[in-house]
Amino acid sequence: MPSTTHAPPAQPRPGLQTAAVMLRRATAAFAAASALHLAPASAQAISEPEDMAAAQPAAPQGYADLVSLFEEFRAAVPPAVVDGVPDYSAKAMKRQAREAKDFLKRLARIDDSDWPVPYRVDYMLVLAEMRGLDFQHRVMRPWARDPAFYSTTNLGFGPKMHDPIAMPALPIARADQAAFRKKLEAVPRILAAARANLTDPRGDLARLAIAQKRIERNVYHQLAKDLETHHPEMVDAALGARDAAQSFLDWLEEIHAGLPPHGGVGREDYDWYLKHVLLFPYSWEEMKILGQREYERSLTFLKLEENEHRDLPMLDPVDTLAGFEALRAQADADLLRFLKEEEIMTVPDWLKSPPPEGPYVLPGDRDPEKGGPFDPPIARHFFRQAEDRNPHALRAHNLPGHLFDSQMGRRDTRPIRGTDRLYFIDGARIEGWAFYLEEMILQAGLLDDMPKAREITYILQAKRAARILPELMLHANEWTFEEALASLTGRTPYWMEPRDAIALFDLELYLRQPAYGIGYYMGKVELEALFAERAHALGRDFDLKAFHDEFHSKGLIPISLIRWEMTGDGGVIEDMR
Image 1: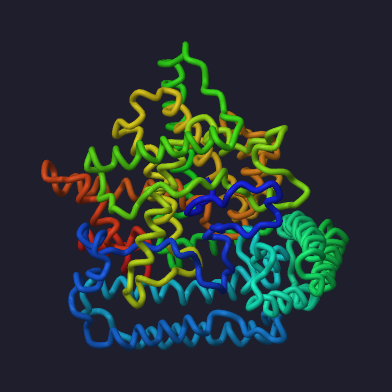
Image 2: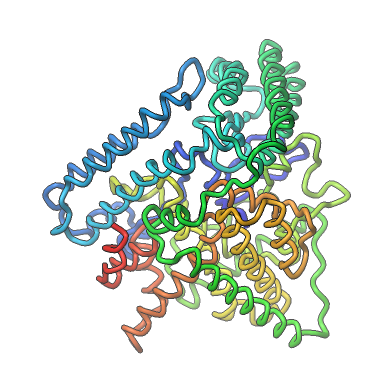
C-alpha cells in the first residue's frame, strides 16, 4: 500500500484538491521528509512524550557540537531560490557538492568513540544523512538526470524539486493569495531552467515525466477554469503554468526515444547506498535470494489457505463509499481491540480510527479528467481490489503502522533523532514495521474467523515479494521500466492488470528512489531477525508487548541502529562507518 498516514477524502475531481496527507516518500530529495517519526523512550513514554529525552543518559562532552553541525548541515540542504526558481544549476550544484564533502570532514573531527550508545546512534544518523547528500551529487543527480524531478505540483509523485505547489481549496484565503500567485507565475521559469539543467536525462525517467506532465497540464487547465469564478486575476498565471507544462511535455516527447534507456544507479552504487546511507545489512545479491524465497513462501501459504477454504467464494468488493467506510471502521475497531486485549503493543489513548476519508487517491487519479473512486464504472487498482473486499491487513499497515508512527513523531523533541529523516534513511523502519503488522495480525489470531481475509493477506504479501526483483533489476540497469512492469504484474497472483495503476506507481517510486520498494519486505525481514534474536536471548522471559514497545522507543531510525541499542552489539555498525 502506498505509505500514507491515511488517505485524502474521495473527491469527484481529485486532480483539483489538495490532499490531506501526501505520500511521505514523495518529498524532494532536498526537502525535509515526512512527519512520520516515532521515538518514545519507553512504553511509558508512549503516553508521556515529554519523558523521551529524560530516559536517555546525560549528553556526553562534544554532543552539543554534533547537534550544532547537524543543524548547520540541514540549513545548507535546500537549494537557494532565485525569483521563485530553486537553483539547480550546474554552478550551484557544484558548490553544494563541495559543501557536502566539507561537512563530512568536519563530522570526522568529532570523536564519539566513548559516548553512550544512544548518542553514538545519533552520530551515525548525521553521518548517514551527510553521505546521502554526497550520494545525491555523486550518483543520483536528479536535477540533471530525472525530468520528473521538476514536478511543480505536490500531487504525490515521487522525489521532487524544492517547494512544489500544493493546490489549495478555492476560494483562497486573502492572506495566501499573493504567495500562491507568485508560485504560479514562477512555473514557466522553473521549467525553462529545468531544460537547461537536464544535461544527462534518461529515457525511462523521461517517460515517467511525460505521464506526470500530462496530469500537471490538466490540473493547471482546470485550475484556470475554477479561478475564473473565485480569483479571475490569477487566471493568466494558471494558463501560463499550463502552457509551460505542455511545452516541457512536448520537449520530452521529442527527445525521450534517443536517450540512454536505463535510469538506475548501478549495482555497485546501489550496494554502497544500502550500506553507507541507509545503514542496511543486506546487499543486492542477498536480497535477490531472500526476495525469491519470500515470494515462494507467500505463494505456498496462499495456496494452503485456498485449499483449506476451497468451498468458500472470495469476498465481493463493496461498490459504494458508505460500504467502504463501514468496512474500514470495523477493521480499525477490531485492530485496536485486538492489540490491547492480546497485549501486543501499547495502544495509547490518542491512537484512534481516523475520520472517514475514502480510498487513497493515487497521483495519476488526481487528473481532473478522471472521476471519483466510486464513479461508475469503478476502476479498481490492485490495492482497491484487496481493501474493498476486506481491509484488515491494509488497515494494520496504516493504523498501528503509519498513523501510529506519525502521531508518535510529533511528540519527539530530541534534537537529532526527533527530526524528520532525509534521503529515505528511515524507509525500511517505516515500511518494514507497517508490513510486518499485516502478517503479524494473521499469525497472532485476529483473522482466525476470516478465512478470505487470510487469503487476501497472502495475496498482498506475494505482490510485495514480486516487486523486489523488479527494483533490483531496474537499479542494476539490467531491465527497462517496461520489463520490470511485466515481471511485477505477471508474478502477482491476482488482481493486477498489465498496466495496473499501482504497479505503475510503485515502479516509478522504486526507480526514482533506490531501496524504496525493498524496504517493505526487507525491513520486515530485518525486524523479524531482531525479534528472533531477542526471543532467543530472553527465552521464556521474552514478552511480545515489551519487545514492540522497546523497538518503538528507539525512534524512526534504521533497524540496524535499533538493534545496536537493544542488544549492545555494534559490530554491524562499525562495518558501516
